[in-house]
Length: 528
Image 1 (cartoon, helix red, strand yellow):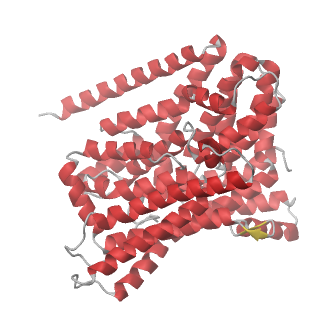
Image 2 (spheres, rainbow, N blue to C red):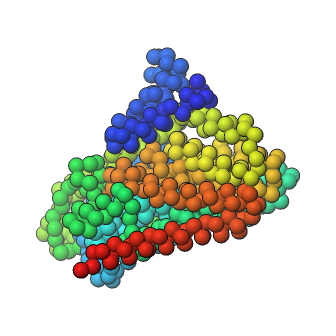
Image 3 (cartoon, rainbow, N blue to C red):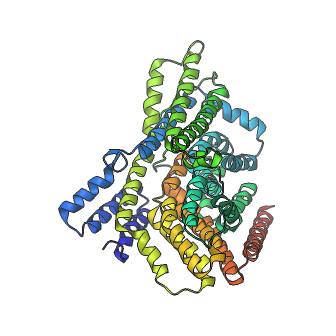
C-alpha cells in the first residue's frame, strides 16, 4: 500500500472531513488514524506503533528532542503571552487609537497589512504571526473581517518568501538548486542566479500579489469572504461567533488609560530585532563551524529559524512584562494577580493552534511514510508527456502534492529533483520555467490545504477561525492558480517566458476590469 494510490486516502479523508465538518482536530485525527492503519497494512499492533510515533514526532525524533518543532510551539505560546500582556497594559488599545488618527481609511488599514507582509519577508511563520500582531488592532478598528486579514497575511507570507533570496525559503531552495546543478553538466547557471531568474516565472506568486493589492485597494469580495466583510462592516462582528478562534484572548482585562503606544511597539520591535539578530548569529556560527565562506547566502542557508523565533519571543515577553510592571507605580488596576492571569490566558489562547500543528505534523509524518508524494510524482514520470505540457503539468502536480500533504517544503524536496531531471533529459532550456512552476504550485497547494502549518499560523496570527480562513481564501487562490496555469501553457507552447508573463498580465487586467465594472454597477444600483 505504500507508494500506491491508497497512500492518497489519509490526506483526502482529512481534507474532505475538515471541509464537511469544519472540525479541524477531529478531521486531522481521522486522517492520522487512517494513515497509521494503512502504513501498517491494518495490523492492530503496528498501527498503534505508527500512531504513537506520529503523535510524538513533534517532541521526539531519531532518539533526540525534535527542537525544530518544539521551538516553534514554544514561540507560538510565547506570542500568546506577549499578546496578553500587551492587552493588559493597554498597549493594543493605545496603538489602535494612535493608528486610527494617522490611518484615516479602511483602505489604509488593509494596505498597511499588505506592506507589512512584504516588509517581514525572512520567514513565513514569523511573517504570519508578527504581521497579525501589528495589523490586527488597526484592521479591527476599521471593521476589516478577521477572514480578510488572514487572507492578506497568508497571501503575502509564503509568496514573498518563495521569491526572496534573503529568507529561510530562499536559502533552502538555493541549497536544493546547488545539489541539482552540481551534478548536471548541461546547466550553466549558478544556484543564486537561477533562483533570481525564476522569480518572474513564478506566475502564481505574481497573480496572488497583484490580487492582494487589488482587494486591499478596493472593497470587492467573493462568496464567503463577501459575507464576512458585510457582517463586519454592518455589525462590527469581525469573526464567527461560537467557533474556535486561535489567538483570540478570552480573558477580560481591566480597562484603563495608562497604556501607551510603546507598550505594544517596544515588545514587537524587540521580538523582530532579536529574531533577526539570532538568525544572523546562528547562521554565521553554523557557517564558520562548517568551514563555509561566510556571506549573506550561507548565513541564511544555515540559520536556525525556530531557535531565533523562540529567543525573540522570550525577549519580547520579558519587555512586555517589564513595561506592565513599570505601570504598577501609577496604574491602580495593575498587580501581580493580573500578571498571573495574563500569563495563563496567553498560553490558553495559543493551545488550539499548537494542538492543530501537532496533529498536522503527525499526518505529514505518516504521509511521508506512505510515500504519497512519490506516488504522485511517479504518475508524471511514467507518462509520455509532450515537452510543451511539462511546465503546466509540474505546476498542477505540485498543487496536488502540497494540497494533499500540507507542506510546500516537502513538495519542493520531492519534485524539484524529479522536475530537474525530467527537463535535463527532455529540454534543458526549459528547466528554470519547470522548476518555477513547481515552486508556484507548491505555494498554491499550501494556501488551499487545511492541514498546512503556514495556513494554520495565518489563521492564528489573524485571530480567525481556521476553516473560515481556508474557505474564504480558496476562491482567490483558485483564480490565481487558473491564471498561472494558463501562463505556463503559453510558456510551454511558445518556449518564451515573456509570452507566458504577458498572458498572465493580460488575464489579470481583464479580471480586474470585470471586477471594477461589477463594483460600479453595484454602486449605481445602491445610489438613491
